Length: 133
Length: 133
Length: 133
Length: 133
Image 1 (tube, chains in turn yellow, brown, red, cyan):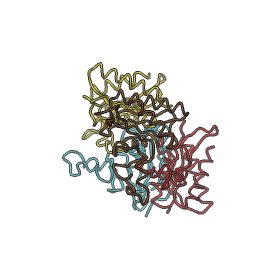
Image 2: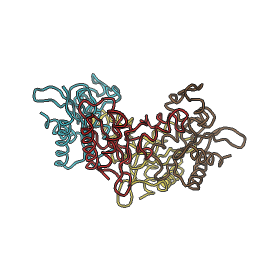
Image 3: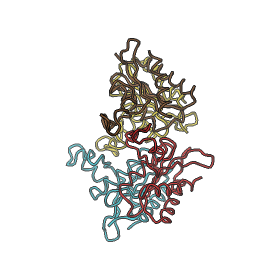
Image 4: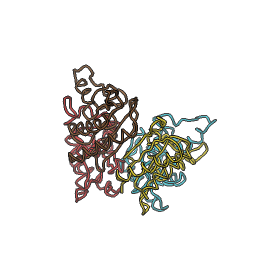
């Protein structure tokens, strides 16, 4: 199964609303179950470098079917997945990438958010993902 | 000056409406005056290879401040810009990339559309750009 | 819908049989509907440069939902898609990439074959795709 | 000397059997003594990000003629090969890449496995390599 554009736009709308609520500026990307980009939004004056990072976070979450930050816990020096970021053309392994599932738990794609602290990035991404459940 | 997310979303909305009107499926990308991605939409079942192409068309238009197809006229064998497509990480020089200007003619960014014949790609891109004027 | 490993292996088996029948050596790649690699086989002493080409042909076919060689007809100098090969990290637009569909015509993925003349590449790819219908 | 496709397919078959035995889903890649891809299999629903990683593990093992995880011990901060992962287009230096040798100890190629914990990745890769000895 795959996310639709209508669902991806709903996720971005919810993520933007959360970003406004917590008073921040974000880049928000949604990829499908094959990691292809479906929808994207760059809020005015959000970090330009996060345009790329938000997309990588979304792909990273779908690549391994877990939140992007979970990868980062394992990829530290001495950790089992040290330097996994060199794969797949460059991963981003800190928080802000979250899987999107339907109400049956089937993976439809993933959302990646970047533009602020990783805590806030994750909060906004989760709000986007929750809009689809 | 720079395109806002609100304007970029309006351009995508108009482009989607035109795509539906002419019965086709498109990928639609909007970049700002610095060639950074502002908004993107992949219509369900549109070509996956056009996700990348739509973004390159938008950047190509803004890189040289002309429609992407104008570059292609100059980049043919024997032409003055032969194989310019090798620059900037890969240009797309056929139609479907159109500048977005405000009512004073100031460039705000560009829109790139891909998913069908280049004639239809251009029609949909122009509809998106016209929504901002 | 997406191709299974069992189906991909059946496609490769049929493609190898056809390659042996016409007395040639091939590289054979199968991608899923999201363009991700599912299975691959390099016949002993087949061209090394075709390991990469076979994968690009398969992706190119799925990117635009047509045989890879159809893209090449449109991407010639003066053609509407001139130099499209610069997109998506590098396309291969000559024959040898063929869509894989189920009996209902739903796209499951694509097969790419490289190692000989493009005519033979296409024959072997088609034999692989036909094994799934 | 070089691994044959028949041997590579036998290694993948043994690796798949081990993956099923330990109840996991893997991506399995076999490269020849020149680090070129010979055969690949993506088990249904295995991690998509591991398609790339499995191939990098196999190449990493053959690049330095040791298990991929041995490189990771040397590439940590302060270690003699710190950040060697930046070479060769991106190495993967954690376990799951294992050399394939014949009964005389001659290197024929390598196998890379990714899809689960690095311990399980290594177990499955070793099972594949052992099928050739």
